[in-house]
Length: 199
Image (spheres, rainbow, N blue to C red):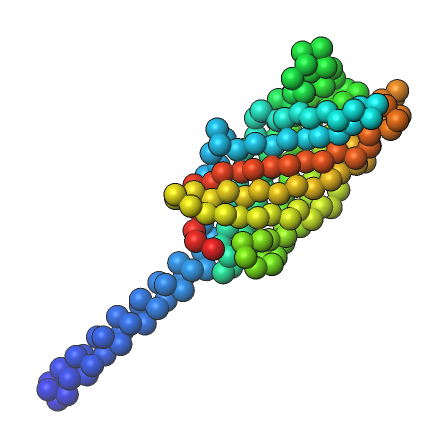
């Protein structure tokens, strides 16, 4: 009886170790990795036209919450928070107007945000992130194309999309005239992340 039990334990031990390792690997694969944004290597740019002349600005302050696993996109999520008071076109006279109620109304709406609902893989490091963009309390559904490249222990998520500023009540009153400031605003981004797992 003791010899039988001994043989059973000898045979079962490798099996149990194998099952344990398999479960651990599966859980590790399923758990989305939390990545850290590197602001000094990241950029968000917005571009439009004023009286037909291209103008371009940047947001100087933003943060991201990224939990991403390409093998578990249903469990992955992305959120981006932008400090609207950090918007700049590089012209002090113009920059002093942007925080006012006509434009970003920073006093009442200090942050804009994008929060993902679903993430879809397109192959080759390309993804589509569908979610909600909120600016000045106005919410719009948005699908953002993202390209992720990796190297030197970092990941770069980049892409662009176009929104209509009037849908978010940015530029009220006289500035609602789209012949003065175009309604279309193109947003480009490059977010450098540390800690994102391999694609």
